[in-house]
Image (cartoon, rainbow, N blue to C red):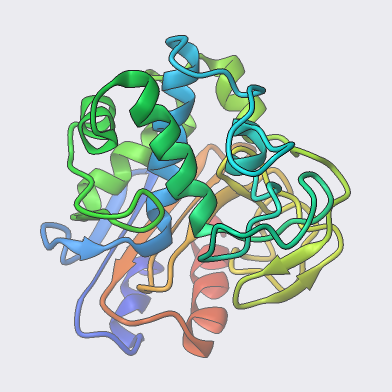
Length: 257
């Protein structure tokens, strides 16, 4: 709890933070809805993976730009830029972070499921997707902890599917990690950003290389460290900035310590 209380010094009016797994603790405005921004992608990725397990889609079937697949879209390897549908690279050649890719893959599931993706998302999670599948969740910390629990001990997904999603897809691709600069390589799984040996990074120096998760421009994040058996979830009303680059790793290290 002493580690979690450091959010009181952050430049936000409201914050909620929790650690779950081997240790359970929470602090702050835990019942307040927060914008998740791109942390939404973790929940969307799981929903797409559930669709793959149900046979609604296949990870390796064509989707998006020519030569791209569902797997490319989830792994930010389709060649699409951040917010446009015109490719700027061939699939599988660069790691380009793309909200558009998540919009497309959600639309692909919608077409196959013959139902709005928002309905499919809520069917999987039990909480709503209010906007874009790339950034549209607005919900309290408890909903983010549902995602954390799934990524620690899956119930919606088979363990083998989660293991694949948390492993490097299209190894060796370079690219920019938003907010932190070019990474060589910039490893991602299926919707999950992989820590590996990246530096600088938004997780802590004590996080294992197997740590995966996502952060958002709204000032929140979720990481899962399988080696520690812990997940750390945080939501705030402060936009991502230099404060977060210093505060988030310090919080992670203090929790792991």
